[in-house]
Amino acid sequence: MLTRVRPGQDGNWQVLVGQGALGFSRDAFPDRAAAEDWAARACLAARQCTIRIGSKRFLGTAAEALRRWAIDQGTLPRAEGGTQVAPLQRLAPLLEDPDCALPLAVLLPDDLAALRRRRLTALQSPAAMLAEQAALAAALEQFRDFHLPALDDPFTEIAPDGLCVLDEPSCAQAIGWAGQKSEAWGRLVALVLTTGAPIPALCATCCGHADARSGRLHLPGGLVLTPPPDLFPDPGNPPEAPLLPGLQEAGTVEEGMREIGNRLQRPGLRPEALQLTALVGALNQGQHLDEILLLAGVTEAAQ
Image (cartoon, rainbow, N blue to C red; front, side, top):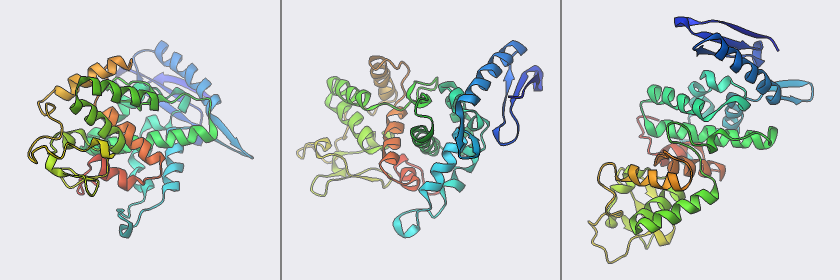
């Protein structure tokens, strides 16, 4: 495979691998040795991720996975609660990110963290960025299952920004350990993992927002959830009492999540990782990206 290592901008080095639809590149390497090392790994990854279907060949990349997934999703009409914006159109800027052109075998948690930083800057909405990442994670999972089943999932490893997608045993452990901390902690972690709701909205919810008769929990901002019955507050609690007492103070949730992350052997785990995990699960169970945007807490203006 044709590989070129050359000086880039600002005194850095650049790598170009392949040509045309099978080509990709990366720059900002500090020296030639680092660029050549990455180029060797990238060439191997390209061979591992080249997929043949009949006479056609294509490179297994995040962009390819996301494009196929978005097309499969289709457009959700407004009459069915959608935005009538095609997922492929909505995800187009993410598809164009240079890291989405890399072979999946060379896409690492560090790359995902850098990708998230760029997308957060572009979107100016943590909720929208998280919904995008859920779509990307779901797309990669589906693509690997079909085409590259032996490939590791970069979303399952803790990234430098504290995000990852937890597997089912880890979710169960997180709920169990949170429950050992306090009833409020157990309810918070279970609510996020079973509903995908934003943590700040849950922490701002009062007991009066819960309607056990209808099975619904009305969050500030208008989001309505249908959590498991055992996560509703005691009906004897005052309506103005917090649903999650003791978790409203700034930094409390982050501090507790660090403890849970250490016990899960994922040091630095951020609270948003719980929501990302739940959003990916919802997409895998058939929910539409438009529904995930609402669940993530994306405002109508940001959609």
